[in-house]
Image (cartoon, rainbow, N blue to C red):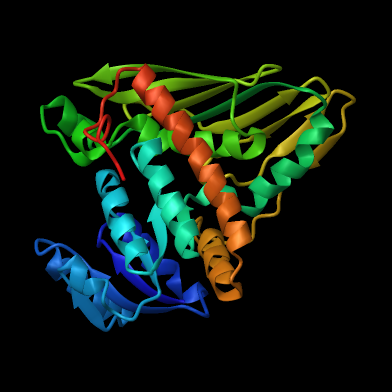
Length: 331
């Protein structure tokens, strides 16, 4: 994989710290804004990245076959779409796009051009998450699912004082649902698919959700997903069945460890994790799929992403949270 990176923020720095695990990937280029050019050059020097760009059109002309986008949420669609049109495979950081309409355009374009298109969301690729999938039948009929991920944002105090940063800006597709509860949603939708109905009950300040509870009705069971950036509490994922329950005492983005406790008293530990950093598993899989030409698996993940985007869009609009992309005509 010949990789070009767009962005120079925290998530890009996180990725660069684990890039040495990708034995078949070469990072060729880094693209940033003019304002962040000094940061980009420092990263390029540290990680031996040869080419630096501040113009995205020029960046897309480079020989990279895959583009990794670590950008603010509202830029995901336009940058990914341009990259696909330029014939590049694309890895987009979560959340994939602000709306299902945009996600559908990207999905259709990638499939028409036989290109790889991934949403980088760590949950799906964790070994312990896959073990959870295998253990669910032992719980009998699922009755309740509860996931909670609350993390007090250091930006929230600034938001309360009147400063609006992208994480709390509707114009940048921010908010707790898109930023933090999305991990819970990937966790649940990856296990159970599309629910019969979706409801989102949010604490809204100045047009954005600072915390909220997403309720998914699957007909035979209910799933409650709590995400907060304005308060903190212990994080966990719990699946309750009529024969026992499974609990993971970690947020859904890490999805590490856990245990099954059945009604008959038997117990089993969830412990298949093997990497020290949550991003390693997902990028190893991206690398492997691209190298092997496995579009079938890629598009299966993409179908899951579309399911999550549909739920996110329904939930947000139901709660009255409006992004600039809502109502815009897309190709």
